[in-house]
Amino acid sequence: MRKTILFVIAIAISSFAFSQENTVKKDNIEAKTTTLSTKKAAPSNGTEKTLMADTKKKEKYIKFSTSKFRTENNIPSDFPKFNDTGNVRKDTEQYDISLKQWIKNNEDKYSEIKEIINF
Image (cartoon, rainbow, N blue to C red; front, top):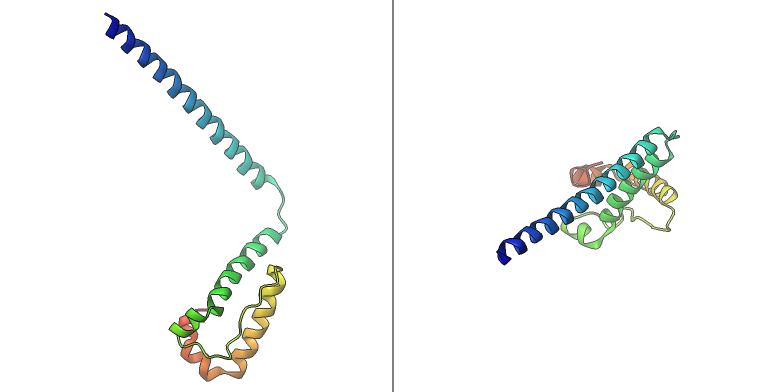
C-alpha cells in the first residue's frame, strides 16, 4: 500500500513538473514568434541586408588572406590581403577595389586561381 501511494505521488509530481516545463517552452516559443513577426512588420531600408552581405564577404576575404589558405592554394604573394579595421562596410569596399585592380593588372594569375577563390 505504501509503495502504491509513493508511486502515485511520484507520478503526480512528475506530471506537474512536465506540464510546467511545457508551459515554459510554450511561452518561449510564443515570445520568439512575437519577436519574429515584429521584425517582419518593421520597415527595412536594406541596411541590415547590406551589412549581412558585407559580413559574409568579410569572412570570405579574411579566409583568402590567411597564409595557410594562400600556401595550400598557391595564391600569388601580391594578391590583396584583407585589412580589418572594424568597419565592415568600408573594409569590404576597400578590398573589393583592391581585388578588382589586382585582377585587372594580373589577368593571367587570376585565371589560374579564379576557381579556387570563386568570386
